[in-house]
Length: 144
Image 1 (cartoon, rainbow, N blue to C red):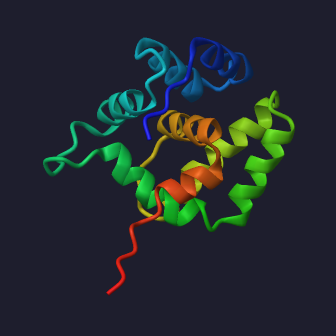
Image 2 (image 1 turned 120 degrees about the horizontal axis):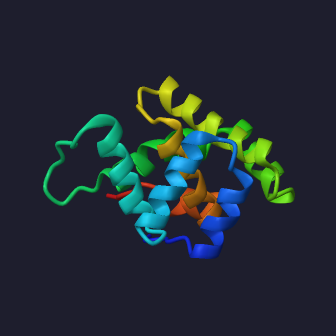
Image 3 (image 1 turned 90 degrees about the vertical axis):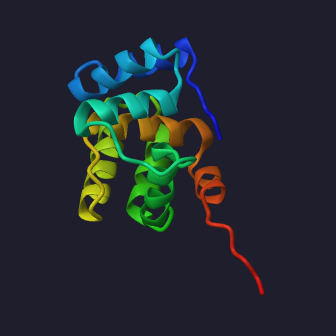
């Protein structure tokens, strides 16, 4: 699912997160890439971790989302934080808390995500919704 943020969404997020430097950096990057979340993710990843060695036809964005799905979709704490934010979408502390929570969950599971990268992922999840994210990234179950 190729989601983009429009200029208004970027500016609203920038206003909310203006005091959180990693998010400001991520939002500057998103603006540079015209709201393309996957392109910004790849750019920020390369900036932080260097060029990834990936198999032909695999997207680091899709692989990362698939790995995160295992943690986020079953985590009641993250789901609760997301719900709290959607009830109060102008809250900088709740949005920053979501980003920090994602960094913590990812790090605890061996996925090196810094706050700028986590910002892009959280904005993606907010854009499409957690239930859609969880359903969309669910592995195909083969029946025999």
